[in-house]
Amino acid sequence: MKTNNTTPKGYAVITGASSGIGAEFAKRLAKEGYPLVLVARREERLKKLAELLETECIVMAADLSDMKECERLVKGLLGKEIDVWINNAGFGYCGETLNIENQTELDMIDVNVKAVHLFTKLVLKGMVEKNKGYILNVASSAGLLPAGPYMSTYYATKAYVTSFTRGVAEELRRKHSDVYVGCLCPGPVDTEFNKVANVEFALKGISSSACANCAVTQMFKKKITIVPTFKMKAAVVAGRLIPAKLYIRIAAKQQRKKIYR
Image 1: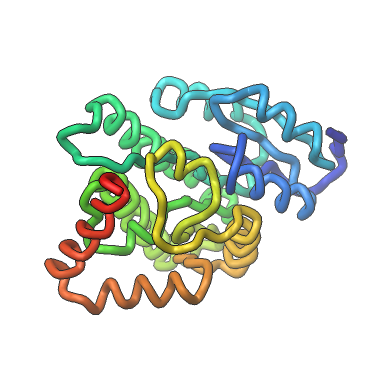
Image 2: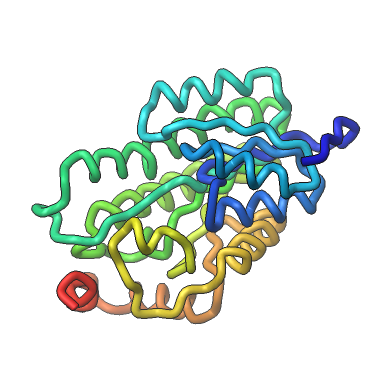
């Protein structure tokens, strides 16, 4: 890890930075010249990543399913200039809702929804005051579709993120603010997500680096809803054109195969 205190750029904060898309966000933003704040539960992984990056890195271990930890994280960053905040931390789980542990789903809601909401509001206030900054919320193409039986809670959390983000973006547009708030809505990505979620996707996943690089490029162009790959964009459009009831039944059939394959 190299320190560069002369950079004019503020910090880029990345949650869920220890692996997958989060680690690739860190690599890309380091190349862009941002000093980084790397956040995740696994401190050792964050430290190893920080050693690889040619920029200043602050490592902050935190469990974002705990709102007190989220507040501690924000308080720990008071006084630091933050130009970019990426809410990347999140997870899913595939199974029949009645068979999934309640705590697993409540933790999912805390990380995927409550932490994203809290961070967005707390960071946004400072960015609006100085009229600059970027907030990117990592959602999913699942958040643009009617529902996902057998991943019902996950789909619902990502629908919240996409709806919340696009609503806030419109509020900022009406204020003529230069602050950006957008959401990344990828399809399958080759990360540890699949193992944690107990799922194997039908569509071939894209690489974490391809996803992160697309997201950062589109973020700086201020694209509000980012869907990497033409194939995934077409799938989202098709999902909107099919009657919701029919789509949900088709999705249920496909998702069930993942559990009872």
